[in-house]
Length: 490
Figure: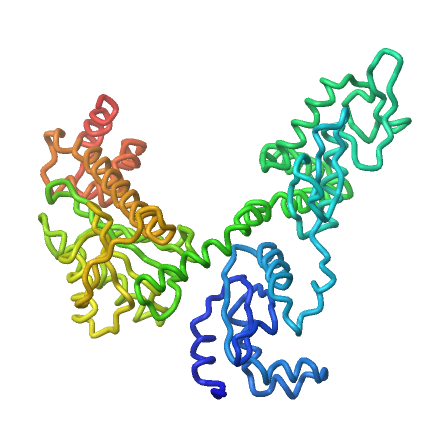
């Protein structure tokens, strides 16, 4: 049996992000023995590998688990709520021997609405019992969910699961016996069509269309506070908190959760096809965009776990030359990106994808050689036949066009292309707006640059008053008035 490599584990911990997520602890056989969630992955996982940790733990079972940890892996998510959901799913999937919280198969609450009913009710459930009902959730915060349902009843005049409506002689329905106040301004007696409109409105809310409602409640809260109605303001504050937690991204995450396994299989297939050391969980892709050598820019987009990670996107203006040279531009931006990561002590991605063929890939590899840095895995993706180009002696590779692994690479490349073209268009639009100063007779190139540097953009210059323009060195009141009038006319 191999021994646990403490230095390797600690190095892996040092590279963890300060982000929420889930971690999986494995034994020497690769079996998952524990799944945990964390608000901060780096802080939480590091505690497992502190020598003093075992001495502070009273439970023998937990101390034994620490001795069995041979390796671990982590999955980043956007929030603690998502971490809680994913933790539950993975515990149910792997059934780790050291997890107890989820072994009773307790599930998060969902809201079920059966539209086949004459008067559909909004019920709480932990299981999808049929395919005909409409389900919302699951929601990890049950208390907030119950409070939200109570507010839905009051705001929209809907029925909850315990309601006992009574049909009237004229065919309409009395929803509640003597609780009209609970449904706010909605009539307690309503026909089926009118009630269906209420159901549709409440369903829209659960689908995520709650921003306007939340804005109204915040206004009520502010007004109550200004009138020193502090008890009312506090109640509304609690309601806002409950609604925000209930309608957070847990639903979107849950829908995506069903694709976690698909993404994992795709990344494993990509690892095998490209002969990578590990699945490419973090991929970065570069693209160059210019118009006949002018307005030359570049983009870098990043995918994490098979999905776009927009906060990690970067865009570059080419600095080292002016003209049309894709290879030189690629060498510059790749070098700038990974020199910075190296200087900041941040990890490189598992895979770098270059939009282009052999020349672009060679330029990217050259950037690492100049910096004397060990490059990560690099490939090019040539558009014509979606051919994969390697930087070594391996022949070009063409994957099955409909394969998930090729489609993922194409999605990454297309996103980089879109992002680069958008930046190029923005830059051209900005330069076009700035060129209006070329037609102002009192300005030469130096004065134009001085004015733009002072205000930052032509838009801010347009909004400036005459006095503000006259504050620029070398521009008197008369010139400032003429420029102000010129910009208004043009």
